[in-house]
Amino acid sequence: MAVSASRSHAATNGAGTARRTSPPVFPKPITIAPAVIPSMSEVSRALASLAKTASRRVHPNDLDARDEGFIADMLPLMNVLYDHYFRCETELAADIPEGPVLIVANHNGMTGTPDMFCHMTAFWRRYGTGRLGYGLMHDAPFSFPGGGAWLNAAGAIAANPRNAERALDRNAAVLVFPGGDVDACKPFRDRYKVSFGARRGFLRVAIRRRVPIVPVVSAGGHESLYIAARGDRIAQALKLPRIFRSNVFPLGVAMPWGIVAGVPLPHLPPPVKIHTKILAPILLDAPVSASNDARALDSSYEHVVGLMQQAMNDLRSERRHGLFPRSKAASGSKAGG
Image (cartoon, rainbow, N blue to C red; front, side, top):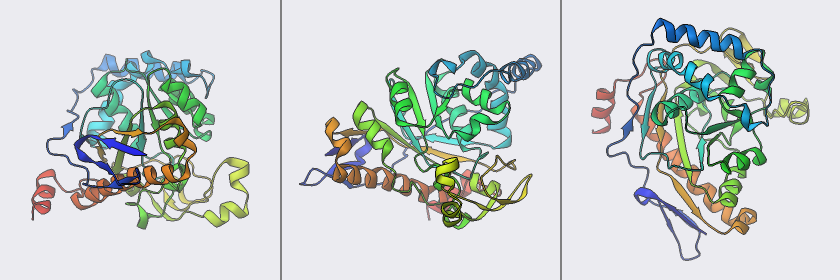
Protein backbone atom coordinates (compact mmCIF):
# COMPACT_ATOMS: atom_id res chain seq x y z
CA MET A 1 0.00 0.00 0.00
CA ALA A 2 1.47 3.32 -1.03
CA VAL A 3 0.96 6.62 0.71
CA SER A 4 1.56 9.84 -1.17
CA ALA A 5 1.72 13.39 0.11
CA SER A 6 2.99 16.76 -0.96
CA ARG A 7 6.42 18.06 0.11
CA SER A 8 7.92 14.55 0.14
CA HIS A 9 6.20 13.54 3.34
CA ALA A 10 5.91 9.90 2.36
CA ALA A 11 7.60 7.06 0.57
CA THR A 12 7.21 3.31 0.33
CA ASN A 13 9.56 0.45 0.95
CA GLY A 14 9.95 -2.62 -1.17
CA ALA A 15 6.93 -4.28 0.37
CA GLY A 16 4.72 -1.37 -0.62
CA THR A 17 4.02 -0.20 2.93
CA ALA A 18 4.49 3.35 4.06
CA ARG A 19 7.62 4.47 5.86
CA ARG A 20 8.27 7.83 7.45
CA THR A 21 10.67 10.17 5.71
CA SER A 22 11.09 13.90 6.19
CA PRO A 23 9.08 15.77 8.85
CA PRO A 24 6.37 18.30 7.99
CA VAL A 25 7.83 21.42 6.41
CA PHE A 26 6.48 24.96 6.77
CA PRO A 27 8.83 27.08 4.60
CA LYS A 28 6.30 29.85 3.99
CA PRO A 29 3.15 28.88 5.88
CA ILE A 30 -0.21 30.33 4.98
CA THR A 31 -1.61 32.13 8.01
CA ILE A 32 -5.13 33.28 8.85
CA ALA A 33 -5.16 37.10 8.86
CA PRO A 34 -6.92 38.96 11.70
CA ALA A 35 -10.52 39.99 11.09
CA VAL A 36 -12.06 43.40 11.59
CA ILE A 37 -13.94 44.17 14.81
CA PRO A 38 -17.65 43.48 14.18
CA SER A 39 -20.17 46.29 14.15
CA MET A 40 -22.94 46.52 16.74
CA SER A 41 -25.45 45.42 14.10
CA GLU A 42 -23.39 42.27 13.43
CA VAL A 43 -23.19 41.51 17.14
CA SER A 44 -26.95 42.03 17.51
CA ARG A 45 -27.62 39.74 14.53
CA ALA A 46 -25.40 37.05 16.02
CA LEU A 47 -27.13 37.19 19.40
CA ALA A 48 -30.55 37.07 17.75
CA SER A 49 -29.48 34.07 15.69
CA LEU A 50 -28.26 32.29 18.84
CA ALA A 51 -31.59 32.89 20.56
CA LYS A 52 -33.60 31.74 17.55
CA THR A 53 -31.55 28.62 16.87
CA ALA A 54 -31.47 27.45 20.49
CA SER A 55 -35.12 26.34 20.29
CA ARG A 56 -34.61 24.06 17.29
CA ARG A 57 -34.86 20.31 17.58
CA VAL A 58 -31.52 18.58 17.30
CA HIS A 59 -30.98 16.05 14.50
CA PRO A 60 -27.51 14.49 14.97
CA ASN A 61 -27.70 12.42 11.78
CA ASP A 62 -29.27 15.04 9.51
CA LEU A 63 -26.76 16.63 7.13
CA ASP A 64 -29.37 19.24 6.21
CA ALA A 65 -29.43 20.56 9.79
CA ARG A 66 -26.33 22.57 8.89
CA ASP A 67 -27.42 26.20 8.48
CA GLU A 68 -25.14 28.42 6.41
CA GLY A 69 -27.10 31.51 7.46
CA PHE A 70 -26.52 30.73 11.13
CA ILE A 71 -22.79 30.24 10.51
CA ALA A 72 -22.55 33.53 8.61
CA ASP A 73 -24.41 35.35 11.41
CA MET A 74 -22.13 33.88 14.08
CA LEU A 75 -18.79 34.33 12.35
CA PRO A 76 -18.23 38.01 13.31
CA LEU A 77 -18.72 37.11 16.98
CA MET A 78 -16.50 34.04 16.66
CA ASN A 79 -13.82 36.20 15.05
CA VAL A 80 -13.56 38.25 18.24
CA LEU A 81 -12.97 35.14 20.34
CA TYR A 82 -10.58 33.74 17.73
CA ASP A 83 -8.43 36.88 17.46
CA HIS A 84 -8.67 38.48 20.90
CA TYR A 85 -9.56 35.84 23.48
CA PHE A 86 -7.84 32.69 22.29
CA ARG A 87 -5.39 34.65 20.12
CA CYS A 88 -5.46 31.76 17.66
CA GLU A 89 -2.50 31.26 15.38
CA THR A 90 -3.28 28.90 12.51
CA GLU A 91 -0.61 27.93 9.98
CA LEU A 92 -1.27 25.93 6.80
CA ALA A 93 1.50 24.06 5.00
CA ALA A 94 -0.82 23.97 1.97
CA ASP A 95 -4.41 24.86 1.27
CA ILE A 96 -7.04 22.25 2.03
CA PRO A 97 -7.94 20.61 -1.30
CA GLU A 98 -11.30 21.32 -2.88
CA GLY A 99 -13.88 18.58 -2.86
CA PRO A 100 -14.27 15.82 -0.27
CA VAL A 101 -11.49 15.67 2.32
CA LEU A 102 -11.06 14.13 5.76
CA ILE A 103 -9.48 16.57 8.24
CA VAL A 104 -7.93 14.57 11.08
CA ALA A 105 -7.09 16.41 14.30
CA ASN A 106 -5.85 15.77 17.81
CA HIS A 107 -8.01 16.71 20.76
CA ASN A 108 -6.67 19.33 23.11
CA GLY A 109 -8.31 19.23 26.52
CA MET A 110 -11.73 17.72 27.36
CA THR A 111 -15.24 18.95 26.50
CA GLY A 112 -15.38 22.72 26.15
CA THR A 113 -11.81 22.97 24.89
CA PRO A 114 -11.39 25.74 22.30
CA ASP A 115 -9.43 23.79 19.67
CA MET A 116 -12.44 22.69 17.60
CA PHE A 117 -13.87 26.21 17.79
CA CYS A 118 -10.59 27.59 16.43
CA HIS A 119 -10.42 25.02 13.61
CA MET A 120 -13.96 25.81 12.49
CA THR A 121 -13.46 29.57 12.60
CA ALA A 122 -10.18 29.36 10.67
CA PHE A 123 -11.84 27.14 8.03
CA TRP A 124 -14.75 29.53 7.48
CA ARG A 125 -12.48 32.56 7.37
CA ARG A 126 -10.20 30.96 4.81
CA TYR A 127 -12.80 29.29 2.60
CA GLY A 128 -16.06 31.09 3.33
CA THR A 129 -19.20 29.90 5.10
CA GLY A 130 -20.53 28.55 1.79
CA ARG A 131 -17.95 25.77 1.58
CA LEU A 132 -19.62 22.62 2.85
CA GLY A 133 -18.06 21.30 6.04
CA TYR A 134 -19.09 19.00 8.89
CA GLY A 135 -17.61 17.97 12.21
CA LEU A 136 -18.08 14.54 13.76
CA MET A 137 -19.11 14.89 17.41
CA HIS A 138 -19.84 12.60 20.37
CA ASP A 139 -23.52 12.09 21.21
CA ALA A 140 -23.38 13.89 24.59
CA PRO A 141 -23.03 17.55 23.43
CA PHE A 142 -26.15 17.22 21.29
CA SER A 143 -28.18 17.00 24.50
CA PHE A 144 -26.84 20.24 26.01
CA PRO A 145 -29.69 22.79 26.25
CA GLY A 146 -29.29 25.27 23.41
CA GLY A 147 -25.72 24.21 22.73
CA GLY A 148 -26.69 21.04 20.90
CA ALA A 149 -28.86 22.99 18.46
CA TRP A 150 -26.11 25.57 17.87
CA LEU A 151 -23.52 22.88 17.17
CA ASN A 152 -25.93 21.03 14.88
CA ALA A 153 -26.60 24.22 12.90
CA ALA A 154 -22.86 24.82 12.63
CA GLY A 155 -22.40 21.43 10.95
CA ALA A 156 -21.89 19.00 13.83
CA ILE A 157 -23.16 15.48 13.16
CA ALA A 158 -22.97 12.30 15.20
CA ALA A 159 -19.58 10.63 15.07
CA ASN A 160 -19.88 7.39 13.13
CA PRO A 161 -18.41 6.10 9.85
CA ARG A 162 -21.76 6.20 8.05
CA ASN A 163 -22.23 9.91 8.68
CA ALA A 164 -18.64 10.61 7.65
CA GLU A 165 -19.12 8.80 4.36
CA ARG A 166 -22.47 10.47 3.67
CA ALA A 167 -20.88 13.89 4.19
CA LEU A 168 -17.92 13.03 1.96
CA ASP A 169 -20.35 11.89 -0.71
CA ARG A 170 -21.63 15.47 -0.70
CA ASN A 171 -18.10 16.68 -1.49
CA ALA A 172 -17.76 18.12 2.01
CA ALA A 173 -14.75 18.66 4.23
CA VAL A 174 -15.21 16.46 7.31
CA LEU A 175 -13.43 17.13 10.61
CA VAL A 176 -12.80 14.11 12.83
CA PHE A 177 -10.99 13.63 16.14
CA PRO A 178 -10.09 9.91 16.10
CA GLY A 179 -8.79 9.94 19.67
CA GLY A 180 -12.14 11.10 21.04
CA ASP A 181 -12.36 11.12 24.84
CA VAL A 182 -9.13 9.13 25.17
CA ASP A 183 -7.19 11.96 23.51
CA ALA A 184 -9.22 14.82 25.02
CA CYS A 185 -8.94 13.61 28.61
CA LYS A 186 -5.31 12.54 28.68
CA PRO A 187 -3.32 13.69 31.73
CA PHE A 188 -1.67 17.11 31.64
CA ARG A 189 1.77 15.48 31.53
CA ASP A 190 0.81 13.81 28.23
CA ARG A 191 -0.64 16.92 26.59
CA TYR A 192 1.89 16.83 23.75
CA LYS A 193 1.14 13.22 22.80
CA VAL A 194 -1.13 12.44 19.87
CA SER A 195 -3.25 9.71 21.46
CA PHE A 196 -5.65 8.04 19.04
CA GLY A 197 -5.84 4.81 21.02
CA ALA A 198 -4.94 2.83 17.86
CA ARG A 199 -8.32 3.76 16.35
CA ARG A 200 -8.23 3.24 12.60
CA GLY A 201 -11.80 4.03 11.56
CA PHE A 202 -10.76 7.30 9.91
CA LEU A 203 -8.33 5.40 7.68
CA ARG A 204 -11.02 2.95 6.60
CA VAL A 205 -13.31 5.84 5.64
CA ALA A 206 -10.55 7.63 3.71
CA ILE A 207 -9.66 4.46 1.80
CA ARG A 208 -13.25 3.50 1.02
CA ARG A 209 -14.09 6.98 -0.26
CA ARG A 210 -10.63 7.58 -1.80
CA VAL A 211 -10.29 11.04 -0.26
CA PRO A 212 -7.18 12.84 1.02
CA ILE A 213 -6.41 13.14 4.70
CA VAL A 214 -5.38 16.56 6.04
CA PRO A 215 -3.69 16.17 9.46
CA VAL A 216 -4.13 18.98 12.00
CA VAL A 217 -2.26 19.41 15.28
CA SER A 218 -3.10 21.96 17.92
CA ALA A 219 -1.64 22.93 21.29
CA GLY A 220 -2.72 25.22 24.11
CA GLY A 221 -6.14 23.92 25.04
CA HIS A 222 -4.77 21.52 27.66
CA GLU A 223 -3.63 24.53 29.65
CA SER A 224 -7.26 25.64 30.03
CA LEU A 225 -7.69 23.03 32.78
CA TYR A 226 -5.69 20.42 34.68
CA ILE A 227 -6.35 16.72 34.21
CA ALA A 228 -4.49 14.53 36.70
CA ALA A 229 -5.69 11.15 35.41
CA ARG A 230 -7.87 9.87 32.59
CA GLY A 231 -9.56 7.27 34.78
CA ASP A 232 -9.69 4.43 32.26
CA ARG A 233 -9.99 1.69 34.89
CA ILE A 234 -12.69 3.54 36.81
CA ALA A 235 -14.67 3.96 33.57
CA GLN A 236 -14.41 0.25 32.85
CA ALA A 237 -15.46 -0.67 36.39
CA LEU A 238 -18.51 1.61 36.14
CA LYS A 239 -19.30 0.24 32.65
CA LEU A 240 -19.28 3.75 31.19
CA PRO A 241 -18.27 2.57 27.69
CA ARG A 242 -21.52 0.64 27.43
CA ILE A 243 -23.79 3.13 29.24
CA PHE A 244 -22.48 6.50 28.04
CA ARG A 245 -20.04 5.60 25.24
CA SER A 246 -17.35 7.10 27.50
CA ASN A 247 -14.02 5.36 27.95
CA VAL A 248 -12.80 7.75 30.63
CA PHE A 249 -13.56 9.04 34.13
CA PRO A 250 -11.32 12.13 34.23
CA LEU A 251 -9.98 13.45 37.52
CA GLY A 252 -8.74 17.03 37.66
CA VAL A 253 -9.59 20.70 38.09
CA ALA A 254 -11.49 22.97 35.68
CA MET A 255 -13.56 26.16 35.78
CA PRO A 256 -16.31 26.60 36.84
CA TRP A 257 -16.66 23.16 38.44
CA GLY A 258 -13.55 23.17 40.58
CA ILE A 259 -12.78 19.49 41.02
CA VAL A 260 -13.73 17.32 38.04
CA ALA A 261 -14.50 13.67 38.77
CA GLY A 262 -16.45 11.75 36.20
CA VAL A 263 -18.14 12.23 32.86
CA PRO A 264 -16.49 15.32 31.33
CA LEU A 265 -18.77 18.36 31.28
CA PRO A 266 -17.96 21.48 29.23
CA HIS A 267 -15.58 23.70 31.17
CA LEU A 268 -15.07 27.45 30.93
CA PRO A 269 -11.61 27.95 29.41
CA PRO A 270 -9.46 30.91 30.44
CA PRO A 271 -7.87 32.90 27.57
CA VAL A 272 -5.25 30.36 26.56
CA LYS A 273 -3.53 30.93 23.21
CA ILE A 274 -4.17 28.22 20.63
CA HIS A 275 -1.46 27.41 18.07
CA THR A 276 -2.44 25.12 15.19
CA LYS A 277 -0.55 23.61 12.27
CA ILE A 278 -2.49 22.21 9.31
CA LEU A 279 -0.22 19.80 7.45
CA ALA A 280 -0.08 19.02 3.74
CA PRO A 281 -2.71 16.56 2.47
CA ILE A 282 -1.95 12.84 2.37
CA LEU A 283 -3.53 10.56 -0.22
CA LEU A 284 -3.72 6.88 0.67
CA ASP A 285 -3.09 5.18 -2.67
CA ALA A 286 -4.82 1.89 -1.98
CA PRO A 287 -7.67 -0.28 -3.25
CA VAL A 288 -10.91 -0.33 -1.30
CA SER A 289 -10.02 -3.81 -0.05
CA ALA A 290 -7.15 -2.30 1.95
CA SER A 291 -9.72 -0.87 4.38
CA ASN A 292 -9.90 -4.39 5.85
CA ASP A 293 -6.17 -5.14 5.59
CA ALA A 294 -4.65 -4.96 9.08
CA ARG A 295 -1.08 -4.59 7.78
CA ALA A 296 -1.99 -1.76 5.42
CA LEU A 297 -3.98 0.02 8.11
CA ASP A 298 -1.12 -0.31 10.61
CA SER A 299 1.34 1.16 8.12
CA SER A 300 -0.90 4.11 7.27
CA TYR A 301 -1.70 4.70 10.93
CA GLU A 302 1.97 4.87 11.88
CA HIS A 303 2.65 7.24 9.01
CA VAL A 304 -0.19 9.69 9.68
CA VAL A 305 0.19 9.71 13.46
CA GLY A 306 3.97 9.89 13.12
CA LEU A 307 3.76 13.05 11.02
CA MET A 308 1.30 14.55 13.46
CA GLN A 309 3.54 13.77 16.43
CA GLN A 310 6.51 15.41 14.71
CA ALA A 311 4.43 18.53 14.11
CA MET A 312 3.25 18.43 17.74
CA ASN A 313 6.88 18.28 18.87
CA ASP A 314 7.48 21.44 16.83
CA LEU A 315 4.57 23.18 18.56
CA ARG A 316 6.01 22.17 21.91
CA SER A 317 9.46 23.54 21.11
CA GLU A 318 8.10 26.80 19.66
CA ARG A 319 5.89 27.30 22.75
CA ARG A 320 3.60 29.86 21.08
CA HIS A 321 0.53 28.62 22.96
CA GLY A 322 -1.02 28.26 26.39
CA LEU A 323 -1.38 30.70 29.26
CA PHE A 324 2.09 32.20 28.89
CA PRO A 325 3.07 31.87 25.21
CA ARG A 326 6.34 33.01 23.69
CA SER A 327 6.20 35.65 21.01
CA LYS A 328 6.71 34.51 17.43
CA ALA A 329 10.03 36.36 17.25
CA ALA A 330 11.35 34.76 20.45
CA SER A 331 10.22 31.34 19.31
CA GLY A 332 11.93 31.76 15.95
CA SER A 333 15.23 32.89 17.46
CA LYS A 334 15.28 29.95 19.88
CA ALA A 335 14.47 27.47 17.12
CA GLY A 336 17.24 28.95 15.01
CA GLY A 337 19.79 28.30 17.72
